Image 1 (tube, rainbow, N blue to C red):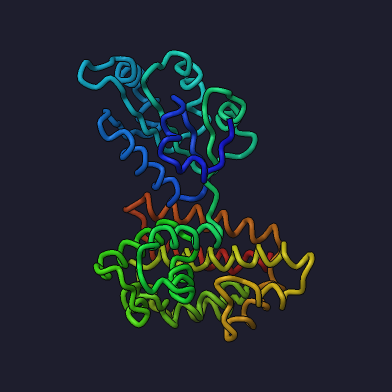
Image 2: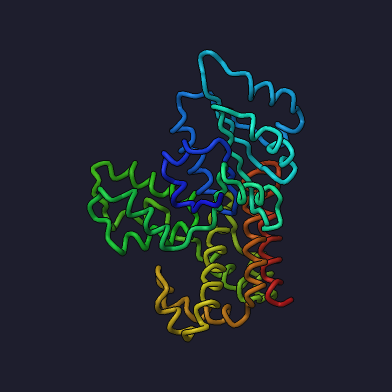
Length: 329
């Protein structure tokens, strides 16, 4: 059964079914769901596993699943990194579980995925797609999370939105910073930029524009000179992702409007000094190329977040070169 993510975010929703599948590119939203699961079932036994953990020792998993404790009458399982490989096991247990609940978390699952199809067609289990947040969703989250704060003006909301670059994980971090700093619940506009460390380095602004303009020569030169701060790589990825999403939206919206009208109506707005770069990039990219770039961006974010051994600087610079080459292919 397909359920919209905004409905699934209601805590009581988690009580309805025994098996739920969450899939998609929105890592922040999936993390929010995991937090809600832990909060909702804080008196139950909660086990956090991966698909590999389960499949490598099926007997131990079954024993764990069906051995009901006298002290905990409900067991909760969060299984991460799920693919079609776990389908057979899910089919085997779906009619056997009683008070237990299993929450499956996957990355992007194509329509042809058998696991996704099983949950979508089921009348007993839920399937929730976790798509990337749009600007309206991000704005709504900010307004809801900070509704009790004085000084939450449209300008402040736009600053927060621009800084998180449609990344819910970063948004949650930024909101926590605001809560920690403005203890009296009075937001000071002058201090917001300092608290959130708003400014992306000027060097990276130049790199970003060269990369997304498909300018190979300038990109190579800038990558030789620019200082890439390792701790900010996830943020840099989010900035690239935000621009790609805006380019994609512009491609869709210009079927009925001019590109100038679209740029003027974007929220948060495209600043006047950035419009020439955006227009150049809009003309350079095709829709299918933007989709490919968004997938590459997501894959690199997952790789950097999940693999601590990888050389992030080298990987990120290769990513930038690959993105730069894409609109020229």
